[in-house]
Image (cartoon, rainbow, N blue to C red):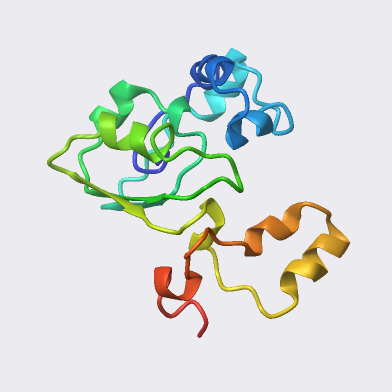
Length: 162
């Protein structure tokens, strides 16, 4: 979203997290060093790349940190795919992808909630035994191999296994 012209405001994100402290991205703010300082926001100033002509957002985290003004000003089409059953990463579709949809020009955006998908369902397929291997190496990170109830990663990302 940043390369399309959306502007991230860390203070805005932290303010939103005061109301949603248990959301997955809010729990990551401290670990990622998001502290709301002006110098930090300078890194997120204008990162727009004019070569970007369209965006596909795959269950974007940290979405409430993007300013509504910058989202409304995007002049390119945006396809937003939200994970319907994201209890794994604690990312509520309405608070994340729904926020994007609410603040983008409705004429230039399409919003779809993918049933059975989690935040990580949009990644590549995990090989058999990958979750256990990841858990052994980095406990807790095996979550990237889990899909929601009824979720089918291969159906969500056709060709992901090739």
